[in-house]
Length: 144
Image (cartoon, rainbow, N blue to C red; front, side, top):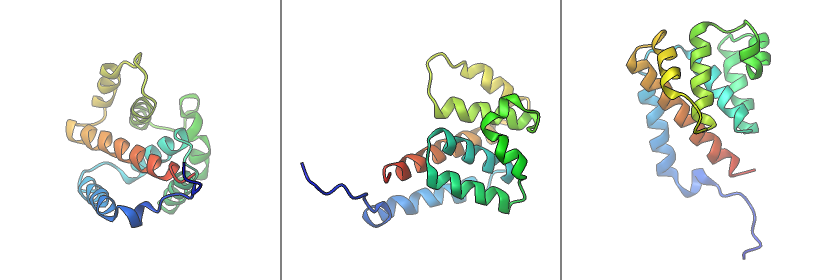
């Protein structure tokens, strides 16, 4: 076993992967998901995944996009406060379901809730956004 426990510089060691991941975000930005919603789902997934770097970054980005400190402070308890709209609540539930995989999750019910607020292309984009933030979180957490 090597005694070198330093984190891998992923950007340096796999630059083509980072370029490809960035291109995914360029494509996703062409969908009409509200930026405010994307900030919330990125931050919520990052909180769940305990990615300190990502929580800090997504909190700053959300504030820069005029998200309120009050809503950001209460995002972690979104189910128990009235700060979030029905569409945001549906998206946050979907975010949590796709971030913490549980065989008991009723994905069909959650999709039905989403369809009350989003079309299929938006749900697809939302799902990809959640998948991407989970990937970014895991890449960053590997550096802890």
